[in-house]
Image (cartoon, rainbow, N blue to C red; front, side, top):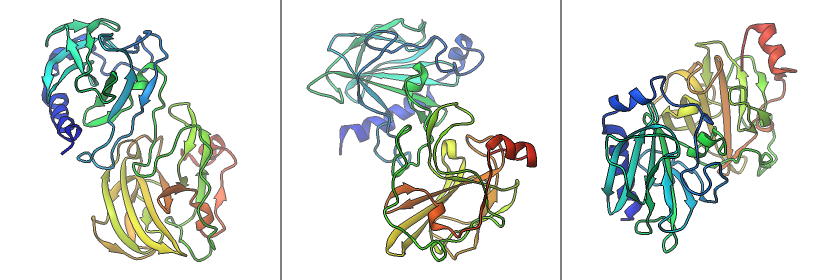
Length: 344
């Protein structure tokens, strides 16, 4: 078994089980907002830092993935606290030195580090917490710092804390890169026979493609289409298939995923996000038009709607060419909100 697969569950226990009541005193308002005094833990405090390996979370919490970022540095380099908080763990863990800092609602981790702090120490942004080691480095024989961040049970991109990493709305399968052009669909489907609309009256409030995110303000790829749906409206399967996922998917909120097998020669999977409730279970077979859930506003959302995603041949793809013609499209996000009292 890979040592990383051993370290990740153990580190998760340290992140999740160590007491946080004392750390809350150093940050009473909860997690510190991105950019509010945060610094890079290695290299120049204001950055930039060389990212050897970026944030790449797994499809499921128990699977392997990259739950932080690796920052290039030299062995023995000073390692700093990225933000103010309280050290809740400092010592060896699965053969490498680890420091965990609780910032109140958010925890950051640093490894492999020879700690110069102990559990219970209060630290400020930029405070020395140890020196970088090579043993246990993800970049061995070279040295690099693995820097992680976790809010509750959810791992997040620590670069977002210093304003360098986008708060990504990622499909946790085929990845998309914020700022990259939308991928080209791998096939040219006949829209009249591929999929059916998952809502009764299809109205597109935000299409697939690059846009300014209504919450984060970042220009990035919108990896699906938003369809108007009042809270509690029925959401239906766009084609027959097997339910492969039902659960909370972080920024996507409550989500259902359905594998449709081959559709016009292309493997297709759809997902239905920000739901208020589920009507199916994993492994269940569904037919086109069957109820899979109810519209809601869970996750990173500004109001009840459906975020429909399509994976064609394993790649996130614009769903609209696969759907029947006839949907209305809002001329602007604001105009739609003002006219119908509906947001996103």
